[in-house]
Length: 209
Image (cartoon, rainbow, N blue to C red; front, side, top):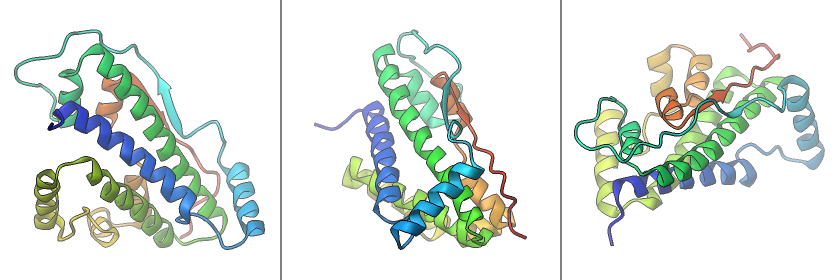
């Protein structure tokens, strides 16, 4: 049976969150030795507060029945949330909160890499790779036809089925710091629709020149 659009959004979000967890634990951000890993962890704790980088509940979920007719939001995911039932919105919020937790982990990774003296380009490329790896695995929750359409659109727009590359983002934003910012950015519209806000994680290590 073909999944509804709402269910596809839910499953895609969950798989993306799982993918980021896998990426963080499978070697994308792991340093070569246990002692080095301990040092990196200590650097992150020292320079980026552990209480930041995650979701905050700022408003109750809408209890309105599923919306019908034209959607007033330009954000497709917001429209899907509005077409969901109150119970489905509860599930969507939980998935979104786990996803924002993982974006917070990326903030910590960024700060740790700064503390290690990594260059802005190296940090930005790592974060773009992490996001694109998550996007690739997310496609497992879609039908072959949906994957084909999505990847065809990305090929036309970016020349890459996964989406923009680090170099394309650098050409767009003009600096590697801005590329890193974009990689850890979330949709405020989607977060707000679910009564959430993302708590960014400031890093007290200045970016390298």
